[in-house]
Image 1 (cartoon, protein in one colour):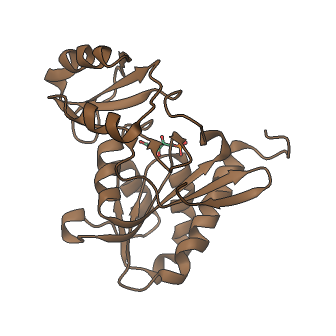
Image 2 (cartoon, protein in one colour):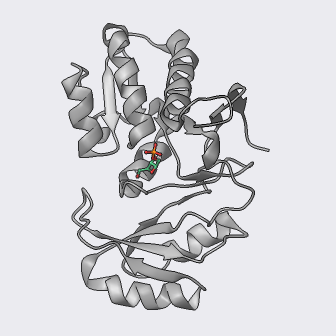
Length: 229
Ligand code: 5RP
């Protein structure tokens, strides 16, 4: 509970509602939305159900989100058949004032990054606990080709991280996740590129080269709408 008595889930639902308000004026029967993954994205999907007749459908960043969308009668399209999407709406594990993010707590980072890359506007929806001065308190996820896991982990140690294999997790792409602990990040754009350059890395959970365009942040005082500093 926050001081105002709101639970984290209530703050997440408030930003899901704010994202609905943000996109509703722009929806048409030809609109295909990009939809993220996680508990905040799920609340957004649940609210989107009421608008299902006002837009064409969605591209999902995970099998879980695709299933939830279909469960609400929202058609799910392959990204390759859509091209670009006007909006990508997703949560974050951490976000800074530049709207750089750490994502991938739910292991969906690669598909999230792909759909985000195809979006005209990335709307990040998050409760206030996700806003940080410096990224890295949340362990940075890195998706790796399974045979490269140990090699990539050794390279991550050289960068200063304490890498931990996320046991038992297989991504929607059939890969594995390494989480980088004790890894505060001063230059997210440079570090995103540096980790992605390690052979065997599919992608990492830094969303800095393509950050969010709008952050809807659920705070005790209400939903704040922030753009990159
Ligand atoms: C999944 C993600 C999520 O956006 C992130 O983990 C936030 O999740 P939640 O909305 O449940 O707090 O990146 O891979």
